[in-house]
Image (cartoon, rainbow, N blue to C red; front, side):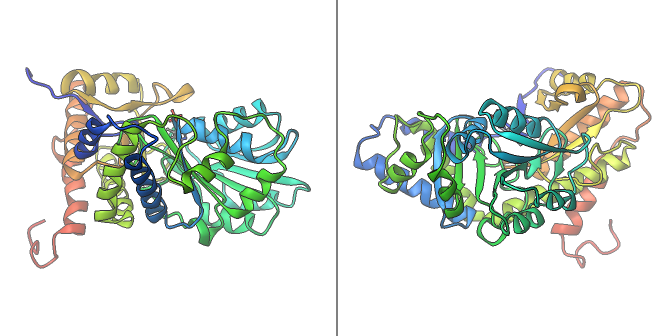
Length: 391
Ligand SMILES: *Cc1c(COP(=O)(O)O)cnc(C)c1O
């Protein structure tokens, strides 16, 4: 049809919260002024509030990977033995980073689409001299999620620190930083925080700071100790991304107004409705055993390249959705739920998917997948009395 609105529907970058986008226009402030100090302190405090932690929280000018790298270069020593829990492309990124800094990783791998069972992780914790455990809370490349609580509580009993890439875990699953012993928790602006890419942040526990004391790895721009000291004074070490901090500040006000638990619940309900719709359409989930709520990876129908589906979403409807990464490219497509996604978005995506399947000769009853998603909404948000006998 003739008008198509472009809609960004990927699991990062995610749809932008409009007031957060507008807030960026006030970026004509200098970062060594009281106005900035106020903004920085408020933003860091709001981050601590929604993460529910008293640990230091440090924003960095970087995409999420910068914070992943900083956690390695600031907290470890050359040759440190560490455990990397890897269930997809982002787990593989941990392996690359720790190797780049000369750490000595033991890699516990799951097949794409699976999570590494917590029992496998805890069984490895007796490894002598283990200094750290790295994992993804949510592995965005496959849609699988790890059992962070069990792993966290077990690592807390050891001398190792747990470094959690929660870049798509935050806002899509409960993460009790202090209760579960999560030493480092990493987030990124362009995921559930509803703002553009370019800011990362991480929380650092006292146990992780003790690791930092003996760190012998080179680092300069990402100097976490220096950043933490400065952040307490409302300062960043270097010129910060003022525009993104203004944006984050506005987005955090919104997240606080609805509540972090509600944001998580929103993603989880969208994921549940997606599972129902996909099943109704006869498609298979890529990570059926350990599905997270950040993103649902769906297998393309037999004999069909998922790239065709991704392209038709864009060309027919202006909807930008994600293909698989690496060897999963062409095999899966990914429907995101994290951050500023609502049921209106999901109903559209499922309706568009049905039309795309129809256009490619697949048997589909138009409306059946949408109805399955609507049913999940109805059960969650329409009182039983009101819908008696109707749906
Ligand atoms: C997006 C993402 C990252 C960070 O990627 P960047 O491109 O550096 O922002 C890391 N881990 C996970 C699980 C992600 O989803």
